[in-house]
Length: 562
Image 1 (cartoon, one colour):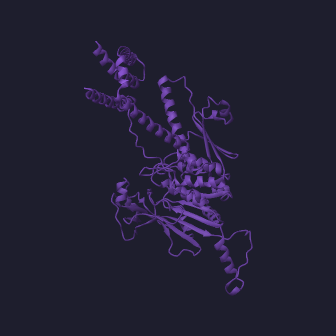
Image 2: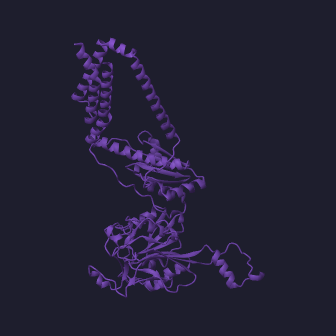
Image 3: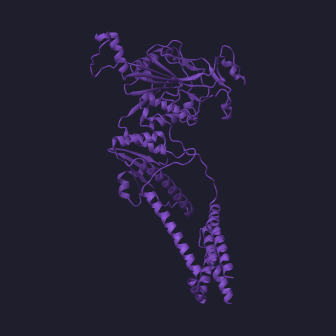
């Protein structure tokens, strides 16, 4: 009888662990899990009562004292590990050790954080996360929604900890609106059904619902730091891609990307407005399909000559009326369509009429940071330089196609599956994007400087004008792309299209602080398993392996006693 009690007592810890494992898998204290756990507890209690002399003898053994010392050493090591974790939590340091550097803060974010340090301005972020229960849902549905919300909160908390660790001027807190109703009412968070974050800098405040990514946080920081409203106009009236068109052919995503950077996007009809408004920081012409009137072209030219900034996106097979005007600014838009038979496009699943661009200008701010990203321009025409541009124009070819490409001049032959290169076609690599800069004299020079020419003589009016022109900060800027579909909703987030378009807009506006690669979403490497599978895995890792180690230790102890 005593031997049976001893066996029952030895196995009682395993029975208790089995009962807890059943509860962990099912998530309920049902009859099975409670019965197994109670049986194990009863076995342990009976063994302690009836075999107390064996337990007391066990405590007096040298092996037990050695085991106790080993256990104390293990506890000491675990305590040191916990202490290191506490120190690391209070003194946060961020280092991305992944091979692809997927979790590093982007260059844009680091630029904004450096600017905050230079301005010595404190940023306060208040994140409201709801934890209420919807009575219209079941208990299981509410539990799932609460867990999902807790996961989103944890991700945002980790992200803001990185921001705060890099720049101590970033302060953040998380609030439950149910526990702080007065604070929630003060910020008027009731108008948002979901979570909302409030970013404050001085008197400026921005509210962002469901913020969870680095891109959202950084764009909100840009908004609160910029007090000036910068307006970008999209030309209308010629069947252009609409800035408010959410279809695949529209430019809503491009316009949203501009708005996210604290710019205001407005449509513009030149004839109704009588010209380009004075508050225009950049004029975007997104793929007109109808020819512009000569008066409209003249208004655009007057705006550019007066120090304007224009972004032109042209499509092949459409005569827009801008081709001849562009020649005067040193840009030649070809009457062709680029065909590319390179293997790079084939590997990416692109056809010959959809070239992938890998060759960029390494020095121009628009493309300097795009060297490792490809862009896709479906149905693109060549955009190059005239043979003899004016001396005052600074022209740069931003992007070219591969050497296995050409500009097909016989557009009717594109209906053939395999177009061929002819002598009259434009041989590759074909330029498809050009940037132009022209310095202009300051209208009202603030300082009258005294110049001296060679030999100490007074400079001539021509030399004086040239000197002032070199030091002038006023300039006209023009960017021309041979395609507009790359900025459409269908292609905007493909490859580096988004960065190329927004970098061009930012260069025109003059805010080169934003010319960089935007934050990218980490590659999804999630392994999707069911809840029951996850609990079974946890049971194996946490309990079964532990039990095997304990059984092996018990077997060694029994063998050594024998």
